[in-house]
Length: 278
Length: 313
Image 1 (cartoon, one colour):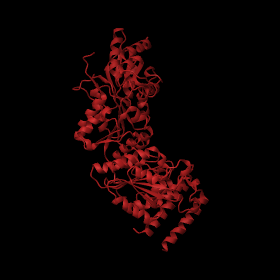
Image 2: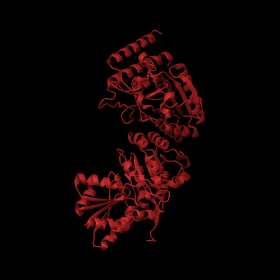
Image 3: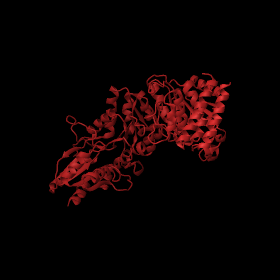
Image 4: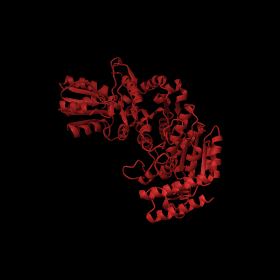
């Protein structure tokens, strides 16, 4: 799939994020929008998955450790055909299977329940160990937030994965530089992120995580890296694609109201039309 | 009593793992640098590729176990009860409990019988913590025979299970030939009419001895072994309490949240009965030889005898 096609899908994913968090009157659009390109690339280019057989034993797996950006995951899964797009509007509603944070029991395509920060890399490492034990070649991806890596368990997991040379594991840090209380380097800086993963025996790649050329090259490099896990430090823009949400920490954890939703969707519609003319 | 065979349930665990490991390729064992103490090292010697030492990082071990289970493995993860249930409680709740993953948490060094290491290592709240997680089965075997059977039952049960194991060598009271472990079922060890004593773990043996002492005083105590703390055997708890009209619970655990609480919950809703809870009463433990501590905290036969006698009067 070429970059233009991926961009179009990512734009649809962003619309799904806006529509679902608007319908939920809550949720986390900022981080969902920053990670939308990576999520799109994973499900439409990188990962070996089958929407008709979500529990296929040999599939590649994703653990969305920053589980609060579930709207991006759900919208991507809907684009890929794991779930009906109209269900996105039930996000966070009583009785809906689309829980506020990913629930592997009830949502097709969700490989791990997550949302309590810091735990997903450990789970992904466990999956990667299982693949090694079974001599299977499936790969495991974990996406963390940059604020999330302030959690100590992330580094326990990094030590484990590096020590065990889990080269079937890729950790993506969605480095949008903002956490709830402000800029990550003002709250409790985890920088330098790449040097930290390097110290834990990861191969590290720093990219612009909203650029498909760089995303493509990074995942290719990760696939070719043997004997160590890879960490992709993806520098992204929080709120990417919706002008008033970009780099605005206020959009970490609230849903857009009717007016904001309308403006955001108009912007994304326009962006989509521009892509169609390319 | 010196002729009674004594085996620590942690040793039973190591041996049961090896037996299960021979038959089941999907069994993997995780430890956090305590393989020599929890006895998972016994498994590691036979199946080194399936023994995953996670180092001193229990939170990560919990997530790794979840990931393995999500990929079709049946992981047993072990550490001391303090670090296998309390340090990583939230990881167990959210990464194992919420998705109902098929992970077995087998923790050794539970209770005050840890001994000399003292209060920081004497976990007296593990059953209370694990009981709180929806879908978690909580087992507390009384001896070697029961522990090995419980480990096998835990393996066969699909879903998360917590198994409490001890450091101290305890008397083998069950007969291997005739023993059958039924998950969720209490075992009446001695019938009685004046009082029911529900005991669990190493307190089962002490309670049997206490009941013999009570018998000499003309008090007929029914002794019930509750090896499954959750789901608790409601039917048996209610039936026995209704029969005797007085209930005592005995556990090497805080009186808050463990067997005593579980029994009170059942009885208060179904058959209100006066209950005496024997255990550790809202205080931390301390250093000392295990048997001396058990005596000091009145969790030996003598202590149980005195308390039950006063209660029944």
